[in-house]
Image (cartoon, rainbow, N blue to C red; front, top):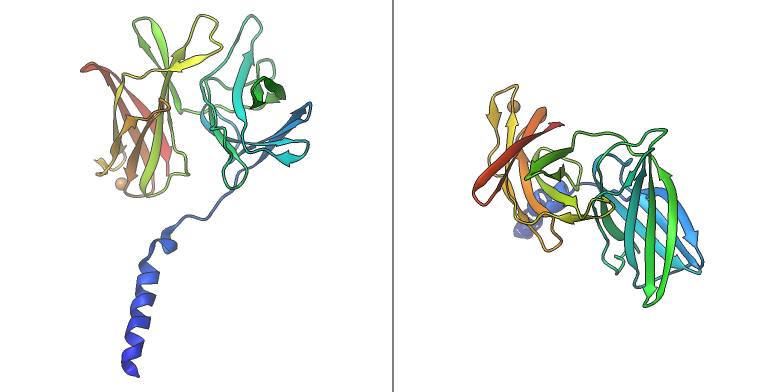
Length: 259
Ligand SMILES: [Cu+2]
């Protein structure tokens, strides 16, 4: 009789230490805007307000009110200034929605909006060959942040950002580093810069220590560089992002974080 408690106790101990205990609560993105054109309606969702740097964005596409199984969503953010307009880097979503009916993309805003200079967002939605609708969300509010830097190489500006796909916490955090330059002088479209080598070094300057275990970002098929950074305690951190190409150091950029 007594022996039968052993496996029960063991499983309780295992459950208590299992990953279910440490998993972060599931947070769903919330609606930021909705717009339609023709029979196509698109809902835009985010986890947080839009800011300079990386923004995870989610689209729910419906046609005549019904979900679609496949939609090519091409994001076209535009900053309209008094004398010129320009775009910013994006990563467009995969055409198949996830289990929640959402298609995730990335928008990398390069400057904050203001009353006079506003970001607008349109998306081209292709449902089948030759059938495409332009859906306009209109002006979007974009706040400032310190997550974007500019690296100049051979006279060309490279937009560098560091982003945390999930809210940063003590421990190991996934990190996305992006590097883009304008495709041409119009600056409406951007292309990824693919020959960079990055290092990530976390430091807590107030206490004079770092943290071991970070993984330097490696370039993925979509042109974004992914790694992870470790924060060993709560407080003020600086992540030093080292950038090199062809064995030449191009610079180090500091990203502050209050954890
Ligand atoms: Cu410390």
